[in-house]
Image 1: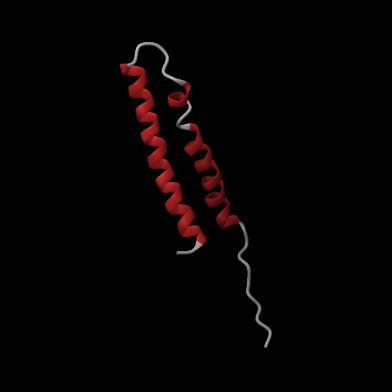
Image 2 (image 1 turned 90 degrees about the vertical axis):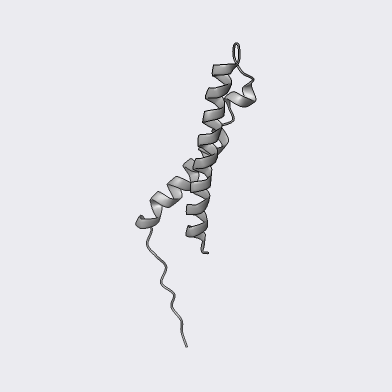
Length: 73
């Protein structure tokens, strides 16, 4: 697989991880009494940040010109 395919697959998996952490965060707030610990509250942020980076890369791909390989014989 090339770099773009890896990036797309990673972006998909990051979205799954982000969704699971948000669901766990909501569940912890619903079940627990009071404010949950900070590591539960801030758990969705690392996958969200990585999704931002991979999403910006994937968004810019169509606008970046492709390199043309010139082979001189």
